[in-house]
Every structure is written in structure tokens, then in C-alpha cells.
Length: 86
Image (cartoon, rainbow, N blue to C red; front, side):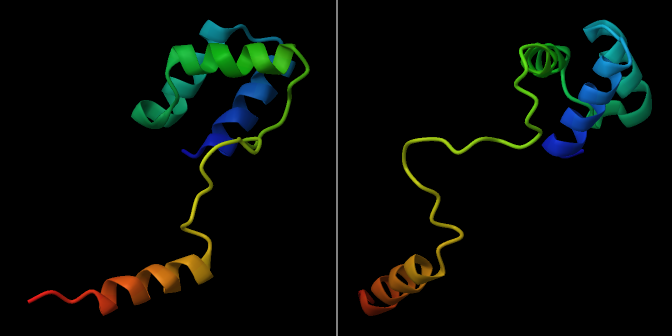
């Protein structure tokens, strides 16, 4: 179960009037061990209640991820291949 799917289910059940315990119990019954923890359900439910209803993660400050930057991957590959030690 990915984050967006879990948050969607939590949002849906919250809007249907379920509390955090009910949401967690229903998710556990359907998704088993792949369901989020009770603490995570509480946090996302709290965010939904405070009008922070985004289902996706917001951009964060700090060190950027390089896994999606193909140019950076090629540069690193070139550095590694040029540094062949005996």
C-alpha cells in the first residue's frame, strides 16, 4: 500500500465520519500488515481535519534527490569509471 492510497482511504473514511480507531481497524481488516500504523492514521487524520488535505508529499527543503537527475547520474558514472585503481 503506497502513501497516496493510504491517505485517500483515510480521507474518505474521515469524511464518512469515522474516528481514528475505526479507520485503523477498517484498514487493518482490508490491508493487513500493509496498512499504516495507528500513529500514522492519527497524524494524517489530524492533517485532514486542519484543512491540509493534500494526498501527496509537499516539496521539502534540504539536499535534493539526485536519483531523478539523469545528467548527475552520468557525471557520477564518468567519475567512477575514470578512477580505476590497481
